[in-house]
Image (cartoon, rainbow, N blue to C red; front, side, top):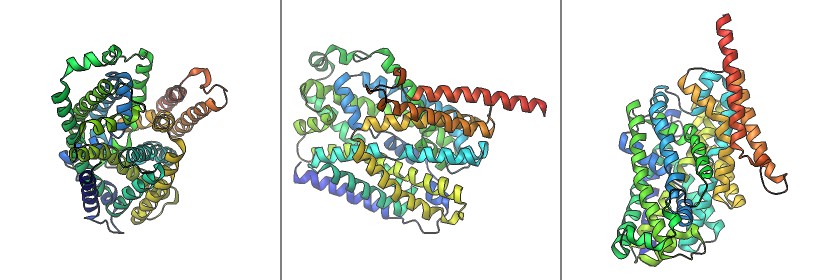
Amino acid sequence: MHLIDYGIVATYLGSLAYLGFSRRAGKKQSAVEFILGGRALTLPAFVASLVSTWYGGILGVGEFTYRYGIANWLVFGVPYYLAALLFALYLAKRARQSEVLTIPDTLHATYGRGTAIAGAIILFLTTLPGAYILMLAILLKYLFGWPFWLGAVLGTIFSIFYIHMGGFRSVVRTDILQFVLMYVGFIVMFIMLVWQYGGLPFIRSAVPSTHLAWHGGNSGWYIAIWYVIALQTLVEPAFYSRCYAAKDPKVARNGILISILCWMVFDFLTTSCGLYVRAILPNLEDPAASYVALANLMLPAGIMGIFALSLLTTVHSTVDSYFFIAATTFGRDIVWRIFRVPEERITHYTRMGLILSAVIALGAALYFKSIIDIWHDFGSVGTPALLLPLFTAMNNKRLMSPRMALLSVLTSGGISLLWLLSRYWTGDGQYWYGLEPIFPGLIISIAIYSFGRKQTSCRGLIL
């Protein structure tokens, strides 16, 4: 990178610091103000914040497109559009009308304190942004040549510092800037690629035929699994927190619908650029670095800095949002709910949770060394534990008893965790019976729900 490019990145960091620190949250600020920004999120801010937060896996997208082509869209695009659409149609308005602060509040109102605490602990662990800290460190290594550990530490410290100062409002203000930058870099790159190499005829002539097939050389079963994994969207804290913070229920629903269109556009840009990398650099040693390699080949000084920001902001917006969600889960839903501390102390404990979250996420990033492993392992346990209890609580129909709901959270999450660990005991690194951990947990959850709902119905008839 040229000195001009470093200047562009430095300007971005300075802008983030200004936006994050410009409105410092007071020590005695109410929980609604600190956690949800006073429920004043407008439609443009809602869209910018949600779109930038929920698209952090940019290096994984580049790697998958390089290896499998347009199958990236069917694996990391369509399943999540459909899940987000379900959320918009069935959950968004209900979330805003509930007037709660967090997901465990909803669980508490329907299924009691025990289920809320169990759900909060699972949410805290699944929202820790270890995967995105890892991605940010890898990206900083590719762009600037920093040691991996240094990028992880500095990226973490910078993120938590301005969140600590300003809370949810700081997250949203920085998300708006990051939303703009993530699109600008890829739009510029796409235009330059089409201008220099041409469009679809060039791609067809230069990539393997499987890269333009819907399956990308993968089995239909492999692609179908991602449609199940995408159900984690229905328990996605980033969606709920934006809906809780929305100005009104209409903003919550329409914001998600518009966000889906924005993700479609960004997926088109990232997948197209990934295909060009495969066409231009067919023997790339590390596909995870495909976008960086393309930038090094294509972009002059100045434009290189803008594209680097596009990559950085895509990851960084997710890091700071998930740090804040993990911190609020710790302060509001674990400490406050278990120890019943005064509500005016929630902001204090949320800030403590931010530091704790940073330490654990940084440790996970340094230990796992695989973005996909972190996504897979945490999602495989959290999704089956929370999906049915939360979905039924949001709809307030066909409910279980509180006792059965707690059993569902603990048992389905525990079974999935046990199944996940079975790969260390089988001797060949495979799961028991070759079954992905998310499925046993979901099966147990459905079984407990069916039995628990029947019990509740029978009690209702007797009464």
